[in-house]
Image (tube, rainbow, N blue to C red; front, side):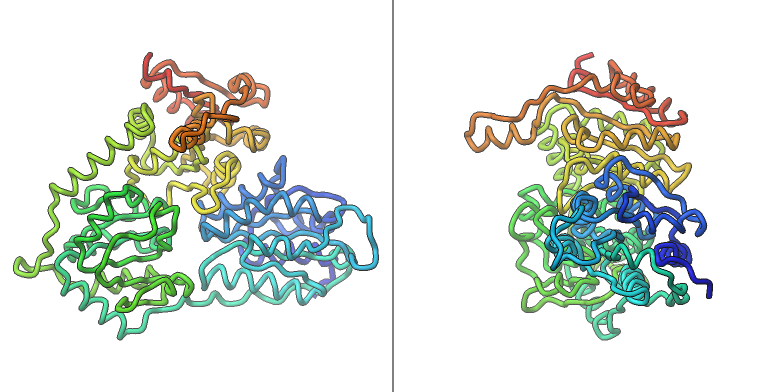
Length: 531
């Protein structure tokens, strides 16, 4: 095999494993990683900040289902990427960060970018973080990451390569490994699950983001079983919108606990049922649960009497859809479709009352956008409302920083997603404060001429925090910051901008933005409803 510097060999290795795009920023410590990128046939996207590079890799991975890869430098470069790595870990996104590191840190102090324990720092936010001390170790660690992405719960990984090693000559990487099969539920457990569903009078399914791959059979499964259903925010779109017994993404509504208290079986598929799903300590059920997950640590949260299935959610759903016959009248579950519809209407009204004015804007935008639009949202009140009331016609088409809950996610993640999807419509949704965390990545969207509408919800403050302070009887403090003229700022980068005066104007501007070469900032304030 041809010898090349190890940094170049790593790029060729990544290309052989299906990597077409790398997001990153070169520096004096990781230049050897850049020697082979073009030769390998990989596109490099130059971020404006390492945090942006990490979020772009995350958005690319969520949009395409392929691992997102970021190249960053020693020390501050990796530290700047740790927030995206933490986000990818919490939301089960396959992101691989490859960084440089110093050759020796024990005896020598005062080196550029020196950290006490760089790998250890990344280990706090990644599934694992390891240093490759030889070419073969680098190859093995990268293959370990890709194998785990394919066969287990995907989470962020970090590999660091010493500077001298990256520049040393090395033989090429071995051929790619075969993709591993995901764990499958034992037949005995599948039979038991079918029997439990058929015996239940009021079964409820809860679908999380881990069930996305089996979404095409869920409509039939719900119809045949007669079960009611909920989705987590990440699971939106898995259950067809028109399904009459679907409560939607409303788990966080407090009185859904009363719904689960009526159930005689809960089937939780591909979901942690985490704090950010429920915003309460438990579902509220007292019945047995069938829990299906790739992650054994999730199953460990089960209770005595539950059926815990360590396996692939897609395979489980396909097996259930085949095995469960249509329920006859004498065995049909007794959920009331009118009660479901009334509950959803009540919760929608509650959502509108809690954060007034956003629901009608969501409705106008939904009507103006194609069904295959993919969304990337930030931590903003606009997204908090939309996640509950915006019925998604397709699964895995709304991405949000759920677990780690970082600001600044939407714009760079949408850029990564748009790069991965090509002509498919992509929209970013950010608040006025969070947008400023990573607004410099607007330059990347302009540079690459990405057709990317950016909805900027500007209420002039950290409104969610202000509301939280008021509820806690704290005088609102440090919740208002002076904002720039966002439209002029976008134009300074070379982007288009619009400040619609009405909902009709907003819909028209959105349609224009979807035809432009380059990004468009659409600045929306609460005043739009009074126009």
